[in-house]
Amino acid sequence: MDIKGEYRIGCERQRVWQALNDAEVLARCIPGCESVDMQGPTRLKASILATIGPVKSKFDTQITLENLNPPVGYTLTGESKGGPAGFARGSADVRLEEIDDGTLLVYDAKFQVGGKLAQIGSRLVLGATRKLADDFFGNFSRELDPGAQRGSEIGLTMDQVPARARGMLLAVALVVVALLIWWFLIR
Image 1 (cartoon, rainbow, N blue to C red):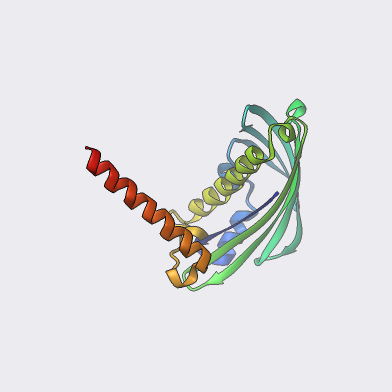
Image 2 (cartoon, rainbow, N blue to C red):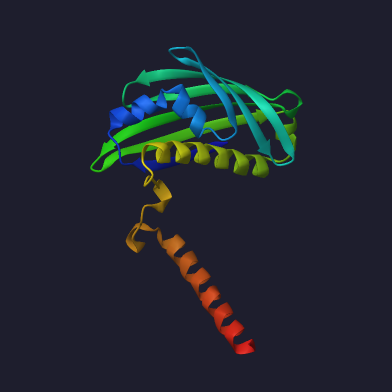
């Protein structure tokens, strides 16, 4: 499973980098996090309570920071074990880009699950995993800048939207207008 996203954070890149390496900040931002302990300069241990579909479990997580390039980015690799619930493995490349009004945090994550998690269906797991990743990066971004914006919330002009997508948007808009007209006529 691949999950990508980005956030605009109104802070200097160095400050964002420091927060990405602060166990207390991470503990506040990880959904369901019960604890985060630094096991060394590039290793963390976390205890996370997570619910994915009908599976609720406490996950013991080991995270390693690799490919360190301060303050530009790093790769997080980790493995979570949730007992009978199964396991999750993954990595996330995190990149910090300087922009005019602060920092653009870009992430590209890849995940694999096994056990009961894999049995409940890939769509459900992908949706829950995407939500957890986005919740973490959203929480993290808002921890530093309450006005942080998710990449998809940054406005696009219609010229930047591909032609096929513009056609789909137009079709959806027409259906909504037709439904509204129909609703007003039957009232």
